[in-house]
Length: 384
Image 1: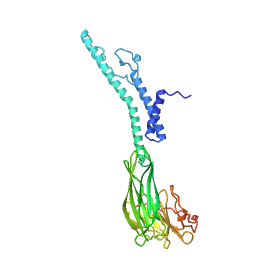
Image 2: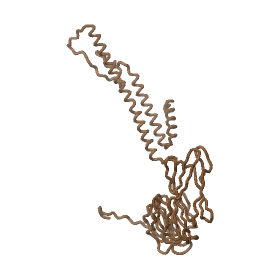
Image 3: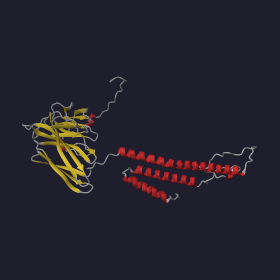
Image 4: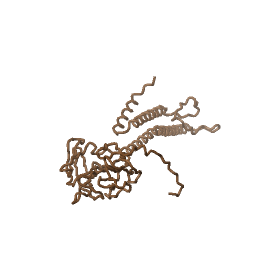
């Protein structure tokens, strides 16, 4: 049968777990730190208990038997002024009394210093435990991402006026309220072809993100394609959310559009991939500068019919008709570098949004036909 745990140890472990849970730490780390804290506390208590039980004068006296002196971690003292055999010890009683008092004073001072050393030694495990706890908390803080102030809020959008106007509204809850806090409208546009939000940036209670809107019927002829970049700022308090959406920049894209055009768009952390079914090439747009560049890999004579992205930021640009004709695809990494291309209507799946088959062509060949692995060739040092 397992020995019963002391009530104080159980209480200390419960308090430690409650404090660590309040800090939002991982459960496995909490169990480790709680057991460590209890073990260190018991060890410190035991050392202090042993140290305090040492007699105040436990040093070996002249003429005493070593076996009669209690031994502990704190009673090892040096015996000074031991009588030398053959030495003349004939002194007056006053001199002997003075010498005895001085020896007792020395002995007390030695014992005091030794007891202090024992207390210092007992604190070492506690200090080590606190250092371990601090390092673990620092590691958890460094790894855990900050909680966004607007994590309990959400933004929904609606299209109006023949897809020329985009309305938005922010609803949800804060620490002290719930409801809908702000709304607005973007546009008018020629025709909205695609929209996407950028990743949020957090600074205190303020959250900033970009909203990207592609107008596929821009310009006087209604066939141009223009990208609009809006800056959305949420300033969250305990009772409200103050929201502003302002136009940041616009850029004309080297794509063909029109009122009947179909636009596709996907994003990586640094790029936007945009295309229409009126152009054979898609473009990449740097989020930081809105600089547009046509992708270097594409299939000649086949317009873009879909752009999809996976969890790791790989993007597939699909080209070809929806129900018949030739198909092709190109794969790019998150920085826009081509990875693969060929025939077929390949596309990718994301973990957060489904791909609609309405915007994808059907394939003309099975993917298993491309199976095959080519080993990488090691290059000599200094060779490309």
